[in-house]
Length: 281
Image (spheres, rainbow, N blue to C red):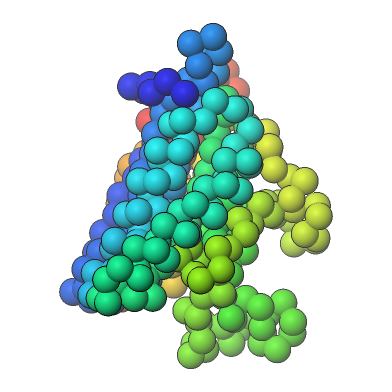
């Protein structure tokens, strides 16, 4: 692909270490391209990663995730990135695991990852871990990913109720991440309704975005402390950059016990069309 100096989407992104005093182990990147010199179709690639491991190992792992995926995205010439994601998850996970074996202080390091690829107005996603992707559309918010955590599995099996999740001691036990001994499969499920089964969710890939849509990627430092309703409310009357800052400030006001990263991608809308309740720009 060919790098572009300007994205065809509105973009706002920020990472913050939080209030715990720990090193920021979150990383993100947003890149704009056109597919090729023969095909000017605009593309935006966004990736968010939350590191796992002490002694700065988590920071190293998440940085590797963001840098390697960004490099692979730049080299891709296909309008459909699912093959890239399939290969990328394997390659990146293997490299993190290899690097961890070279340095005792990095043993066991790993990272979550959430990727969003927008070709024109078509969305593809892939993810592993508990860094989420949301779709904010027509005054509603949808979590279109599913956390790969112990508590999510317990919820789906009926072992826990939704009211028990937030305070459960296994809240942050992650079941799928990059850097594990066996490379994880990318999760291609894109959930648009509670009734979507796995097959339906996978078939939602290539989702057509509409004017005014906002795709948000974030780490659990936000979602642990800020509700879906509050994420939606942050957009009211605000530019995306203001919404991002408002959400990070809210998480910090509530303790900011973890690093916080928020990336928003907004679909432009025609001035003649009905506008949602938020401002882009």
